Length: 465
Image 1 (cartoon, helix red, strand yellow):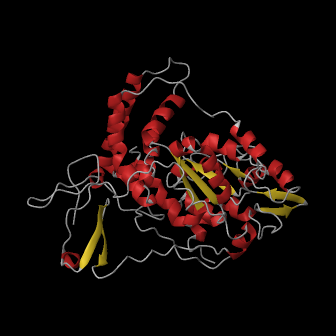
Image 2 (cartoon, rainbow, N blue to C red; image 1 turned 45 degrees about the vertical axis):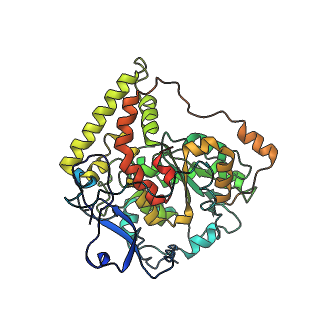
Image 3 (cartoon, one colour; image 1 turned 120 degrees about the horizontal axis):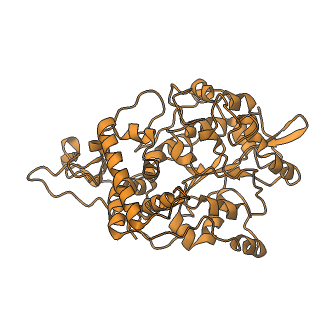
């Protein structure tokens, strides 16, 4: 039912069903096409309403936890995966004599309220870090996971001090702490501005390095200081939070975190270095490693229209010794990157090219390709997804949601004044984008955006304002 066809730009809904679902006993609520399968959402015609799907809960230090899965997921940790060809991303034409395919758009309209999506996500934690760590059981893949980062698992405490909100413990007479939350990314989507405003909250203390990129860039075995001197290992990472720990020791409700902005899109690509296969024959991902090592983490992701993110990255990572690029230069880069992606994906399959991570900045905007790995390993209630455009339009409401998600109190008016006084971060003056370039990139990203909106059940993530 449904299928794949010659168009190169979108995944269409299937046009019909057959077999038991086509005999009239079921009401077809929706039809969707994926890369490998089609999906029908149905209910018996006599049913008044479809039951709500159950929300997966974290399992109960050393009994294997059942593996987590996500309904629409295809990316899987572990050995060899089925290779998707680029043509697998594309819709089939309708068969002769069948109805024209329905619109790929969901019936839910794109909302104009920039903060309406926050309340359902911004739930504070119901258990302390110490309680969650005490109840945590290693997953069935613990040996493989620990093998990718033995320094981490040999350096984790058996328990955290319940007197502190943040994950902290005593070691050699000193308080040691690691992050309570991560802003995972995405780079060039507003992570720096978000982090520095959040860090102004009176119950939050900054680390020595806002974005150390330890989990994706600092190799195991260590090959130098990386961003966590002196050795680039777990002890160096912990040391980044020693200054925060000294303040937390005086004020036990304080928390700390980090914002390595490539973490979200590095999962399944990098892991403790740029070659994840070096010490990773089982295909462990960053999301899987973080869940095993820090299962209590509160994770924040901010997305931006991938066209604008790609444009911003092009200007940010340019050669500063050369003259600023023109709109025509950007157009040529976009044409070249799309052609390179299509050639790679047709030859090697989409998944292999995502793992290859080149052209990197184009791939980073395929947010849905990385989402599954995070939702598979972390409970949904530990993930907060934001949209940059809405954050810019309703900054205070978004920060309020972040503070609630982290379990922090509402700031006083004087504290809000301090937060709001910060200048916007990482804004760049750059030549405009040609209309034809934007149209080309919007067409390229459309199927990825549609799938992201479906996965998050919110059409604002189609960027069709």
